[in-house]
Amino acid sequence: MKLEGVFPPITTPFDDNGCIEYNHLAENIEKWNETDLSGYLVLGSNGESVFLNEDEKLKIVKTSRKSIPQSRKMLVGVGLESTKITIEFTKKVTDSGADVVVVITPHFFKNNMSHETLLKYFLMVADDSPIPVLLYNVPQFTGIDLEVKTVVALSSHENIIGVKDSSGNIEQLSDIIYLTRKENFSVLTGSGIILYPALCIGATGGIVAIACVLPERCLDILRLYKDGNHEEAKALQIRMVDPTIAVTSKYAIPGLKAAMDLFGYHGGSSRLPLLPITDAETKDIKNTFTNTGFL
Image 1 (cartoon, one colour):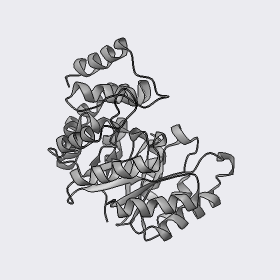
Image 2 (cartoon, one colour):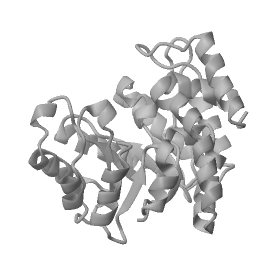
Image 3 (tube, one colour):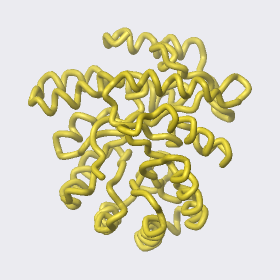
Image 4 (cartoon, one colour):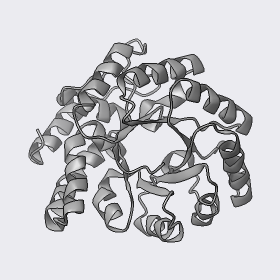
């Protein structure tokens, strides 16, 4: 399986009481289906998966699968702290319709997460997973940066089909791409700020938060790159920097959801302890998208 193109790491809509609005989840996916997105990441970081219990997670996966056409890949985040529990949950989401599992680095005992430890963890998950595995490196959340040598070693496993690297480190991404030059291993950036540069050095696509709000503009970057229109692609990427920062590092998930509301999606509330953004912050997000010509 080759993963390429643009995948939004979709959010989980909650009401003001923290209850999941499954109908709004389905409606968001149906709206995204009107674009040429390659698929979706369900239960990723932006899905607030760390705030969900297992029953909620499985219902989200099943709800999403009903709205996602079989022609598009449904990636599902499964990484948990225990190898055993990760494997068990992987099998459950497979039964619920997942095409690929996205496995984050365990990180609670981060001082013990050596190259050897992580190598064994991912190999054991990949050995027992009924569906392909995508590695997930997101050091800003985990405090662990998956080493290039670990990714390279894991790339030889037939059931590990790629990596989502959200480090934002273009040099590291370049090293991974160069050292895992295999037809069946996909390298995707998890940073919307470097989507175009990542494509230029050989990434097969991106799983980026800004695609929840501006899917068609992300797809435009991909199309322009493929068509060789590099100046236009670069100009569009630069325009998207401030909006991308607004919905990631500046205002995070509550900001992403506020931006989704502005563009006709159901962003809704986040689940506590994440606090809603203020009216002033919402205005700043709106101004950011307006000043860059997207709203």
